[in-house]
Amino acid sequence: MAENLFDLTGKVALVTGGNSGIGFGFARGLARAGADVVIWGRREDRNAEAADALRAWGGRVFADQVDVGDEAAIVAGVERAIERMGRLDTVVANAGLASQAPFAQMDAATYHGLLNVNLHGAVFVLREAARHMISRAGAGDRGGSLILCGSGSIFQGVPTMAHYGIAKGALNSLSKALAAELGPYGIRSNVIAPGFIHTEMTLADPELGAAITRAVEAKTPLGRAGKPEDLEGAVIYLASDLSRYHTGDTLVIDGGKMSAN
Image 1 (cartoon, rainbow, N blue to C red):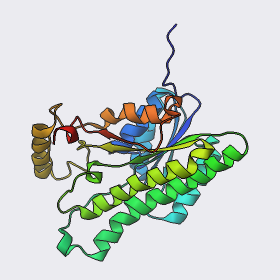
Image 2 (tube, rainbow, N blue to C red; image 1 turned 90 degrees about the vertical axis):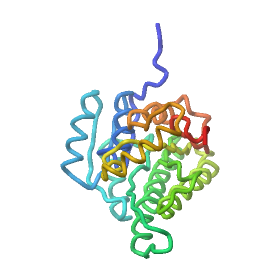
Image 3 (cartoon, one colour; image 1 turned 180 degrees about the horizontal axis):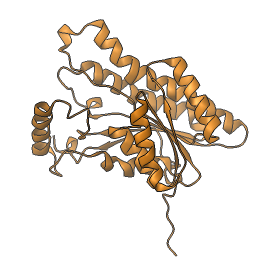
């Protein structure tokens, strides 16, 4: 009889920014594999809609309105998640925003506003997750998976998005530090770096989104832009016990674009 090696039944995963786009793709993949899922988002209506969709796979779902730009809200949100679900086995630091500004004209508000969410928010989410997982390890329940959402801007410069690249590059470095520091507790840390993915955010400007899509299609061996569901396999693997010896890595999911350029 065949065995499902990627079964996440009994595991609990938290996905920040999990009510839409890439975050919902992560949450959907985890739910499809049997995990109970906590999603965070700032919009209560989008949280409710996403939660209803995730419940179709039969697991427990808890949607919470949390702003990852607020450290106190993060601390309280993790406490609520653990109280509601009992534990956290996987935490996906995904929430983020995107903006464009020529570097020479970038003001402090634009720079700090993006880093407060994309970098500092992820740091505090992962810190709270690590505290919980270290505490569990002390009680004999070792393990846990921290997953950080990166991007191709870790490796390649993107004009007018230096601040975005700064945040993603820092997260890549953070993940390696966490892998080294938390490994003795059985806690793993890895980055998923998507290529250009069609989401509500990346296609907010239809003309720009179409132009980027054409450029990506021309340079990508698989010949298309990505979709959130293309990331499901990576997040399921990293949340599963099959990745128990895999930490400190960055998985690039971009249809082969980086390998060909």
